[in-house]
Length: 591
Image (cartoon, rainbow, N blue to C red; front, side):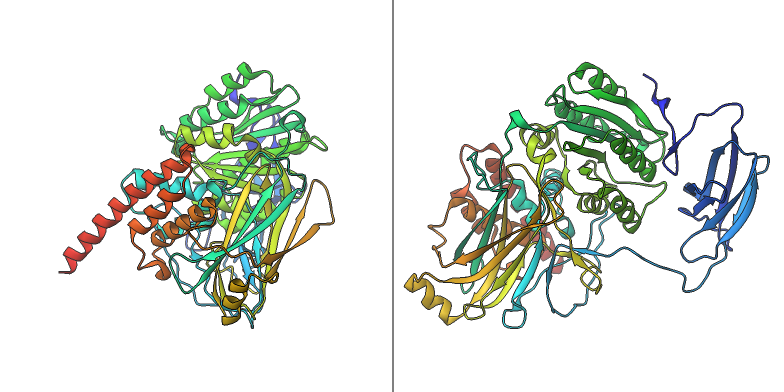
């Protein structure tokens, strides 16, 4: 099968090149001869819009020898030029002060109503990019009793941390997202016949890193879909085959991963393979899930090379998904990349706008990140959050097997969308509280337009959220009396299928305190993960925690029959060795 079945140029339109076609070429620069990328180039006759690429260059195939085009970019005056295919066009744009605009509304992971904005600092790490996070702090319950949390089932942070540790390296603090460490283990998951779409339970216990405080755990569980009755699925594999993917832990790993995913498909399911790299195109036209050899062959034929035109690949994938949309089915784009987009839309804001335009069509997005060195975690995470989707990082074949085979339905079948919850505490019992994890990106919390945007919950997923709080004297009296009272409420909101009206449920936070040594083991393991994240993030509240304390709690709480949980103990031991060695070096250097 030839790769050039369909070729995409900038705008998402496909063309057939023939003798009547003309190629209009040129470049766009500013007044100082600096190339301008991502300039909008709109054909005045047809209305089609293209983009300038690397070095500000552009190439447009059309039937007209000459045509008028509008050139526009944020921060520059518009220019209308008459282009001739017989001449190379040198376009100059003049800077326009005050013309910048941003229509994107930042999305928050959590939000406390009325809380003043705080100063923020940015943190960087080499060529890899991570969203700079602002850690949640304690807030006064009397002044700010309610906090909203956007729910999602992303798990990428844990496997990415494992990648750093296995390479005997310290972990960038912004690569650590506490809630994703908790998500990774699917704690307290079971195969019970839960009938509610989402259920909520809470537990009060002691805080192991601060003996004067308490923890409130929230366990949200999604019902498990019956595999025999899964809806027909239409998948578009969107695979990055650019030159940056030419490493063993990138494209070859993804080829193995997509074969694993394909092995689960049925005759009523279908797959289309879209690639982007040296060329953007359809590698495999829509094919039934029972034609596995045909799908495997197309996957094996993928070869890396060229730049990374992420914009054009995403546009084509969504166009294909819309064309083959299955009403009432599971329609999903599975994007696999190192996130290093270098042609077309490149900034996180541009990517956010592109995905937002397409997610309303009822098409889900699963993002699979790979690679190291130039891995763009922040971009892939943003795509998943904005595209009704989830995000996993594949650091090995075993991780691909976990995400796409063992957790197949969790990853690819949603039971609830736009899921979020509002916590409300009673100041009589809770003096101050702090959400552990669900930290916000740098800048988002300072934007007064920011909103909490709910996420997607996959089939059978069990999500743990934790809140540390400062108890009042009344709380101590309450738990000792074991009175049938509650210390707060949780309002859960979500949508199912094509519902336009959200479902809302209210759960009380019961007075069900148990001492930490008696609380269920999965809550104790969750606590160890929170402490692990705290040390990796270099968070002040955890600065006095010793590695052996975390290892002890984890050792006493992991399921001995669960390989993934047992592997966590090895990860803790290896992390301790790295950070202890680093601390000794620093101490020696200071002396």
